[in-house]
Length: 110
Image (cartoon, rainbow, N blue to C red; front, side, top):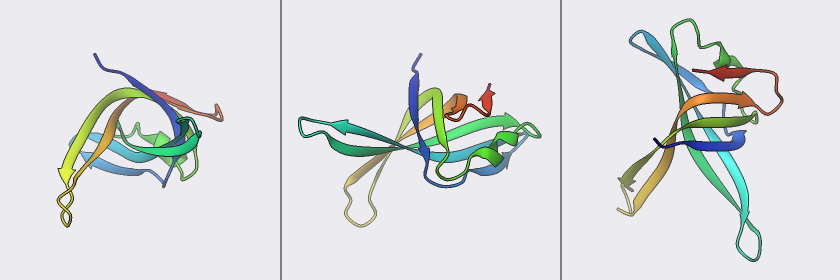
């Protein structure tokens, strides 16, 4: 089993899309951290997907740009080649199992 836990802020409002009998809520989370001897700040972006049964996706209304969240989920990697430069690109994707708002107002679990 793989597991990842991140805390960061949403870069934009979440979007919802119906997929069969379910709804997927998609959002991107930025995680800032300091690395190296010079403590240079680095931002990593994670593409998050929260799957819910239709009618039980009310959390999406709270997932707004700048919202602080803590995510627990299963990681995956999406890799592709840039169309122009042909350089490899990649993004870490997370299927969310547990979502907590840093303000503590709302919690959503599977």
